[in-house]
Length: 131
Image (cartoon, rainbow, N blue to C red):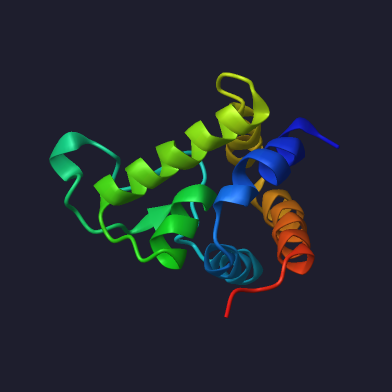
């Protein structure tokens, strides 16, 4: 298992709802251009833009935005940092989430989509969906 997969499986996935995973599957399957690499969200998470509507996000931010009903840059940024903090704690390693984030940002989009889609589908197949 690669480091990014370990972080995803044991550090990130446990803190995402089934609904968040479902929307992530759809975005990966359809190559939704709102699913971005190289940044948390657009507009960027700056204090003066915290109340702005979100236009696109990384995979973690997207899960919160589309799966949890978050609407502003500030809400998505807080969600992103909360998930990363949970991952670091769960894995007992400061900044453990970087292994997933670096892989996600640096992997060519077509490869990232295919591999992350497999992981998200695996996660959904392992737990019953909430009603």
